[in-house]
Image (cartoon, rainbow, N blue to C red; front, side):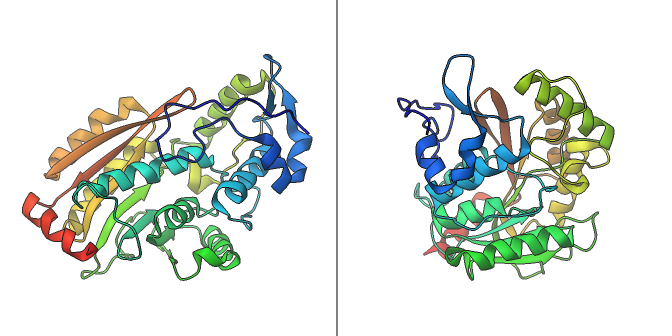
Length: 317
């Protein structure tokens, strides 16, 4: 068993993130014993996990969900994207803060809050964290039927998620909200982690860079966090994906309080802001986030006027 390390705060994470401290590998191995096979000393002599190994990454995140969130059954095909739990939790916490601005400074909790997760993936991770942390309801969508079936299995295998997450297949991969939201639907917030790469070749190059950084390996590399085509690749990349989503969001301007998305590349912000100007968004927010050495951000926009936002508060009472 690894020696217990002094707790260190990952200060860039949200203050409510359960993983702000250095991982307690002893506790994680207790709930996921197989993880011990992938623990090694780093160059500073500290126990760590081999992040270049996809199996190790998946076991670590399964252990994190089990130990910190009481999610005991979280499994999905190995080819699907394995999300890093701390970063995904940060997104949810910052969204909670955003919603609190429309609720007299208090984070709204319970099933009166409904979130739409665009591209929930096989892991269903954002709805899981949102349910555990804030008891919100979720509509989880995906264009891949196999991924959505995996998400359903996870929901059915964990009692805390039962009747909290509804899964809907997006049958047209060009759409985001069409076919999912009806004219009378009211959604408090949408969340999305867009495909990052513009092509499969770009995704492969990105994998090589990441694995060189993690382990120094130079040969043909496996995606350490895995991922199928629809999770990683979109024609035009992250920038085009988000701009297309913004254009479609205008059609559902009165259905949603806040539309949001992760934006990994800062260089994409200019085009995103231009797109938001073109659809005449009433409010635009950019929320910085960071885990470890990685910096990212959430862009949020709303079409509602302040008076309409105030009326929205009544639905949370």
